[in-house]
Length: 131
Image (spheres, rainbow, N blue to C red):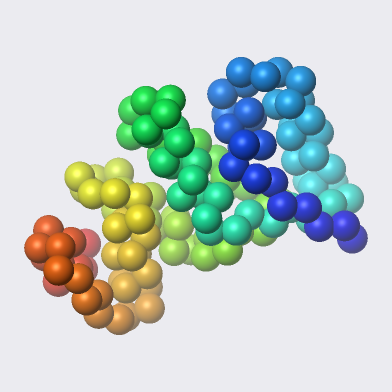
């Protein structure tokens, strides 16, 4: 089976539908994956980029960004690195005033039962409380 990585731009076109032709192409690719005709891979960096661009460039509200990230995480026919960590991170991100990256780190420390070394006092406090 052929494998494909969808880049950040592809997901942005799908989410924003600002270039409908490109959004349609991504939808077709996702339907192929759903039918088992292609395997879609999503490296971790893609979710971080989606978050960053939607927040800083498109100025979307945090909840809107979370919904879009959850859509990727919840798609069963997409192979996502660290799906469980991202699922946990979304929960942390939704209820704390911290970055998505910090939320991911907290989720990882929690799920892997490891300590987080940081000079960030707020993050250290959250890590100590096991969010």
